[in-house]
Image (cartoon, rainbow, N blue to C red; front, side):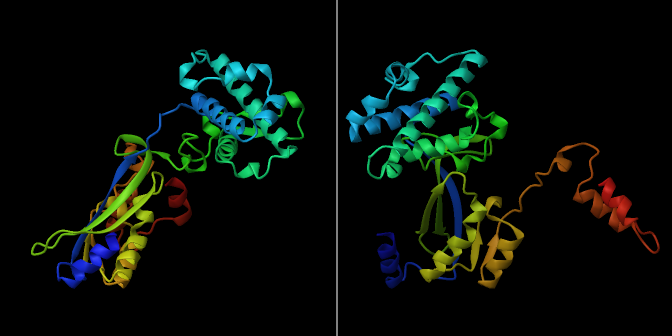
Length: 295
């Protein structure tokens, strides 16, 4: 519908290429409850069991231990989860062992295409991020609950079994779970302002990763701007050069230096290197090996 609207606006002279456009992103909060790690693993296991209770109820009753009914009978937020670190780790360990046992039973079952059940897929993704399983280890040491330091990046896992595409992100002091949406609109002073492009990604996709895709989409619609106003998140040296090749002048601030050297008093960053290089004249040359090692 947007493409049809844009085409009609072009026909009426309300929209033209080679004008000014601006792009920015905002957050979309997923319609899910925010879960901590312990809640996530427990609720994902519960959701998988509920799905199997619908698909293969008779089979599930034959393999489910009695304590599963107590452990996964209610939504995890309705439980009083353990508070001590030792008991919380024990609970997480038990959920992991239960989940891998469930998958091993599914592998020998006659349930058709069980690997593609939505909640089973969510369960496997959760296990990959939060647990480690060594099939050759003794049974009591086969499953291990990972520490927070061992977790891969957020895009590798899920935040809820009920929206497996929602991701966690922190930007400019704001945290959310969900998605990011990019809006581009015309901003010529003598024209009406119209949305020209909308793109939604998961929250972990950085703005700079979509800048060139946005340019290509606008070009496909014959709506490439001559000037494109963006914030620093969309700017990089490579993006600026590639935009120039498309005859697009990107206008926006460069990103702040986020290196640890720029935040540590007495550390060497690129500004100090620039000042020193300006003072070097004639035969005054730094010793490469020594200077590199000192930096």
